Image (cartoon, rainbow, N blue to C red; front, side, top):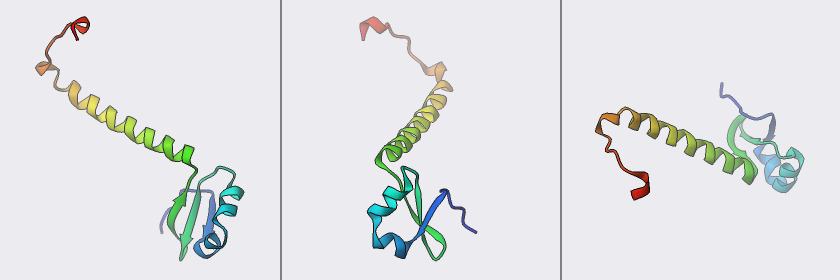
Amino acid sequence: MQAIYSDVTISMSEFKKNPAAVLRDAKSRPVAVLNHNKAAFYMVEPALFEAMLDELADQDLHRTVLARMGERANAIEVDVDAI
């Protein structure tokens, strides 16, 4: 069974009738739009989508930092004021 990551769900046919009303009724919460009782997609407000992208970017940066910390032996010392 597929997990649904939202407290608010709606069928695809109901969603197509009035997407703006679905967004309004969700009151800023994510909405899982279902097709045959499986999540077809999630509708989220722009602020939440931006926060999700920021979190993914932070996680990617964290992985980069950890990888580079393992390469400290190859580091070159520089004077920050000279940059």
